Image (cartoon, rainbow, N blue to C red):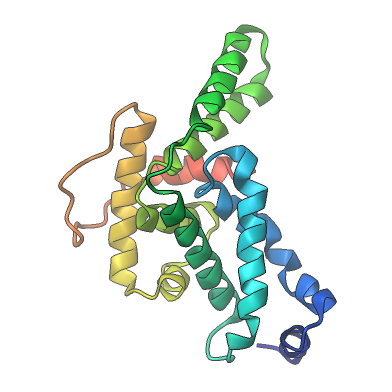
Length: 211
């Protein structure tokens, strides 16, 4: 950690909102993409990302410079998303139906749409499928395949061994591939399932769908 970053963190910990904004500004697009995998619908993404950043601000004084700031930040953000997912459990997800209706409406104009529209529809389908993954698989796929974090960085964020990250990534890719194919996802996969290469197409698909 360089002296400039350390000074900015200390200033933000003392309550400077401006320092905090500078501290997290470079992370905003990635936090928003991360939020997209956990929001109930696309219309909720910004609210969820904002909620997570508020928790980062409130918990900033707990950062003790014992890890990389980015690792700590994404750990707090990840926990905020998990909390939002748990609090939403059991509630009726009435917003999912309008999302599908909007998708159908766009699809009805597909014959006259250009490639940009088709790519947008593909991105929407991918993110809806990501929301169907169990949270731990979702986190691994988004952080590794979409955001480009290393195995070690994801392990630090999740607080699990690298082997667990690889297993979750393998299972998450397989589950996502099944969802994109119109299935319900594979059942009966073990935590120590070997990591294969069957998710390469999912990784490439996700990389093309970051925006």
